[in-house]
Length: 349
Ligand SMILES: [Zn+2]
Image (tube, rainbow, N blue to C red):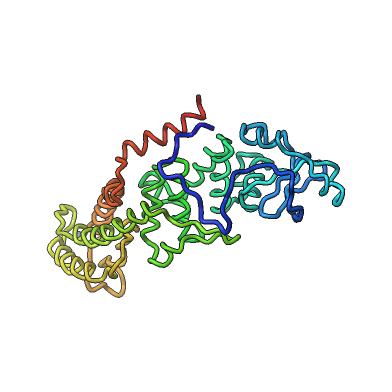
């Protein structure tokens, strides 16, 4: 696939350096058979991290030139065949992790477009993006990126209803995938997630189940440092703006409501824990309803509460649109969109 080059190609930190995939005649021999992807009539064995996957050449080669070339070079390993009764089945070693290969095979052999039905977790989605990008499998790449956007969306509305992944450090993985595939529209939500991590988590990165570690590159760490400071400031500003006086014609006790607002404004500004930059979190002010029992100390009428919540949404929406500036990303939001379109349109050409 001729995807546009990533501005910052990323490789996760691995236990061992990752070299190019290549078939090899001198095998290290020992491998265990994958429990799921070992077909007795398969005609190629892919070995990743000591795990062998016996699958079908044609299926892998059908949509990937990279696979096609790689598999055409696969050779039987005479020693292995004799010892294990593998009948001259060609073998190819890859430098991907076994988990990555397993996720990709689940898509390729399991009906491709049924990611939801396959109950893919975030890690599987990430694995598929890495390998579909590497092996140039465009439809799997596009579907997987769409899946990633359900966790780290490109719009404010989608952000409000996003899927939450199990691990908060998945935001680091998402930022790296955005860079790897040049899908920069994912970057603001991903970096926002990174800014909600504490320093140790942010620096140590996401440790995958198999021990592989994903960390942010220096450039994005810098964007997060800029972002954290600004998000905290914006959070204080937001509380101040939301609770500024209302001019609500539908309110019959507007003086009382505005008195409550003045109190709440001060309370909230002081109540925001130091370093809290979760400025996009939803607001729920129903607890201040004057009809609530026991009556809250700063009561508001239902009409004013509705206005305040709408005001908070508008302000958060504005902050969302300013995220590229918050993170000091050089890419303007227009460029972010056009670059992504460029990646996606390759599938149509
Ligand atoms: Zn009111």
